[in-house]
Length: 151
Image (tube, rainbow, N blue to C red; front, side, top):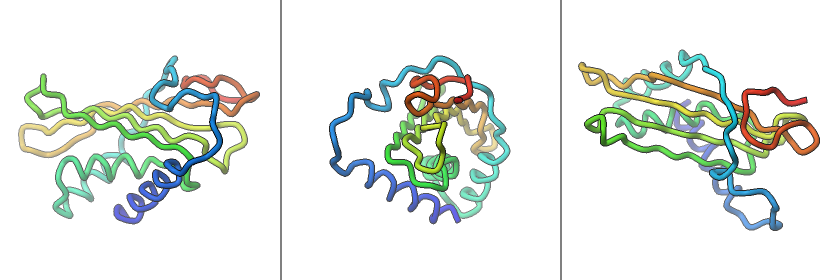
């Protein structure tokens, strides 16, 4: 299941990289974040546990957890930024995942997830914090990422 979700996102990333018409929109990484809400980390933690049981590295487990958050309908644009925090002795990771231009929703254009992971004293990878924000289609609300719902 983890591999299938990862393949889905890889395909979506390939589609997003395909040339298309020039857009007036900024790149996903430059779209402002105006607010977010805390998210339930239980599904993320379940994917981390499944990946760890399969022998995945911390990096691979985090990517599996992030791709599990992707919508079922492949977004036209995706961005995943995963960084190891050297200030924490390399035991903490920060990730941002953005899935945008989702074709099956008429009001929400995309979602942004900001996550923090760490390895605990026993070496187990855990999700410490997760926040979620939405972006609306034009004429359906805000075009930045926000905790405010779309119309």
